[in-house]
Image (tube, rainbow, N blue to C red; front, side):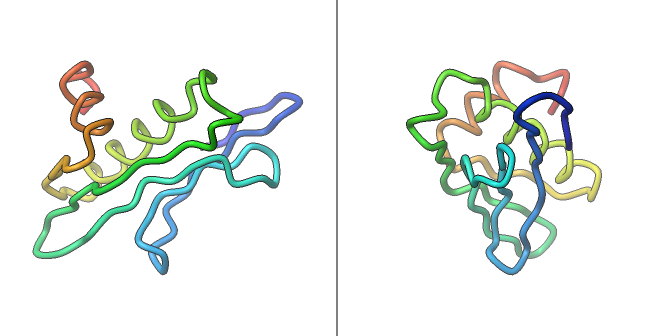
Length: 94
């Protein structure tokens, strides 16, 4: 995911690190850790840089990660409370 503007926002899966990362420009702004096994993806922890709080980056990150997991036909195990809450609040997008 990429957005235009003064601060370009990108989200990508980083499989070597077992996490999705969100960047603002060249700066890492947050991540969502996961464990992948047996057709399941368990989201274990999501973190956004406190300096970037309130910008909706956590929502963008989790939406991208959940959409990607669904596209890969992975069963989502939302261990992380933020991911669990996002899925509960957005059933149409998860």
